[in-house]
Image (tube, rainbow, N blue to C red; front, top):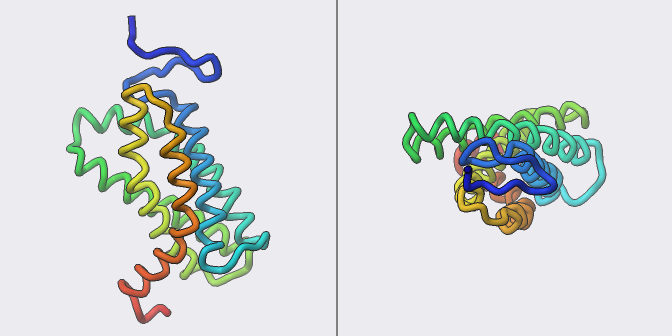
Amino acid sequence: MSTLVQSPRLPLATSLTGSPLRWGRDLAIVGGMTGFAAPAGVYGLSLEPFTLTALTTGLVCGMLLGIEMPAFLESARRRVSLTGIAVRCVAVGAAVGAFIGFVAAQAAGEIFLAPFVLAGIAGALQLGWLWLPYTVLTVLERPTWPVVLGACVVAPLLGPVSLELSRLAVGFLF
């Protein structure tokens, strides 16, 4: 008998790393909130095509990434060090964030370079810290909402932090 308990709302986790649907739900929340709030921290809070597209794309990408995370972590835990998993999560966060920035810039008719870079940094920062406490809570069968809430609280800060980091890294762009 598995020690994992079936939730009445989500199916039984198929592995130690939890339910893909639970991950998908929570990363959709984080992705949507980050997609909306991070650019709002730089450009101001508005319902322009950029922020609405970033919200929607972040929600969908977060859901898809979340559905895949348990399988990724399950396979990686046997072959890759904790540091290696952390580096991969940062890289995936950067790639997903950059994609969201690119799509949002295209929808708004903006030049894509700055949103691509800033959203990539924001995605790397967000997934870079989020995956470990979320995974630990999942493995311990504890509620994950505190980490999801923390990610939503941090989201508005990611835009300005990404802007400053990009200025430090590539000052000639701005």
